[in-house]
Image (tube, rainbow, N blue to C red; front, side, top):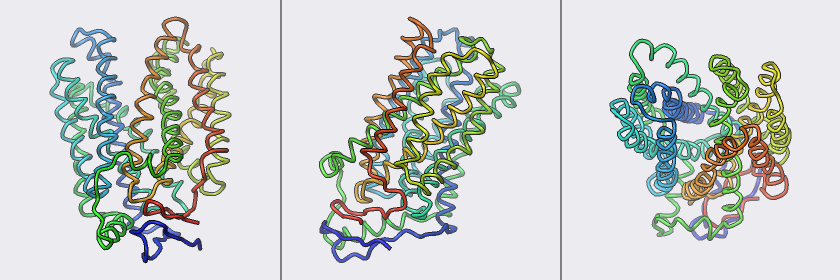
Length: 429
């Protein structure tokens, strides 16, 4: 058992907060709820991708207009990426999780009443604020409640809700759009509001967060908004976390935004074949998140993340030289497995390197900065595609993913299976 020494005043005299070595009903319930919340996030985010051809035809707008709507709504969503984790430090993980789920459920329903690109932009932007806040808050809750021994696995499984949500939306579209039209997809998005009832009944506040709050009250300290605290108290960790978010998201956003076009048009596979390929890849990705998380718990992120990043980057470059449908499928499957597999536990790492006292603020600030810069990936890839091809831009995405290898191997301290710090200045050994 590791020992904990405290240098910060609030933790003086506090008993060490030890993570359980096994799953409990509570920790499993928290993980399940957060996975479903993330899956419904992605369900909503995927709707616009699927119905874009319908909206272009129905409203008589151009692809450039739809691209603008998507880009602006993503940038507006940065408000939620930053604000909700910060609020989770001030008011607790559980109530803020409820706010985000309820928020995107209601606003998703409103999006179904859009009558043109302007109202679609307004409703989708408002919805994305809540959408963008749910995952980082869920990541905080899972980090603080999962067994120490299986924390990386839990965080990998949490983000594994992405391919699950993607598949749910794809299957729903196949059945619902022919019967009731595209608006029904948004109306069904109201259903996640039922998760709020489950959250209120099924889980309590994070015990670790409650313990920190109690110690702060005992020490006469008040919670206050200090968005610069992570960078002031943990500059190295803040830079590493920002780079982790940027490198992962630059690769993933560029890959996910342009791979459908690359397969369907540039490699002339057609829409049906492209859809089948992506569906199979996403189905396999669900397992990839759990497998990589488990490997990180066994061997540590220092070795596992580079083991995914290096071959993944190489295969991403190879993709640009393939033309055979069979080779594109299998190399694409392996590439997607490696990119998505390390995604969950890699992003979850950022929540483990900060203390509970400022964990939400740190995650919100570094996530926002990393995502803000990473969001230019589709635009840069679009420029390259216009001048040359998507294939010509794949090495750029590969380089971003490759840089995760040295970052985790040489610079990022491995916190897998280690106790979490609770207070600023607390040393955990």
